[in-house]
Image 1 (cartoon, rainbow, N blue to C red):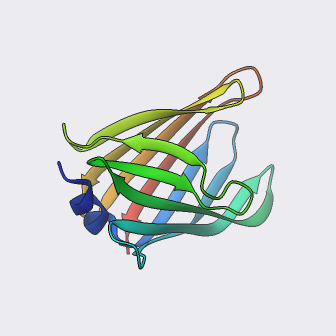
Image 2 (cartoon, rainbow, N blue to C red):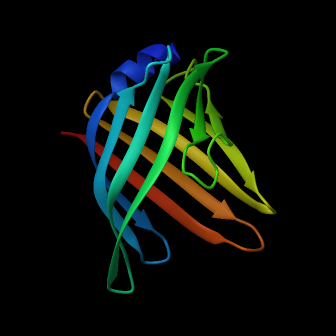
Length: 142
């Protein structure tokens, strides 16, 4: 996969999402990736159940996926961080790309891997003085 526009077309749709968190929490729900009115720009919306210590909460997360300079830029779209850059992923060398995001003194190391037309994975390792955990997300096309 060399063209991020092709990548966006490839991952567009509705996905079953399962996320494990190294702290023992988990998330299960749906992710919707859809084109917007803006060229080479897609919206990402996930919603589902986050379970921590046997207590479930309904949660959501929003991003904007945008092609910029032949790379995939992911931008926060949640109300409290709308428009803030998260990571930029370069898939020109193959189906896996990574980047880091600095949140205060904590670092989010994000990896995005295309497995097939029906599956992709992401992993985020968060480390620093305030945070220390790993998020592993598995997407299966519905």
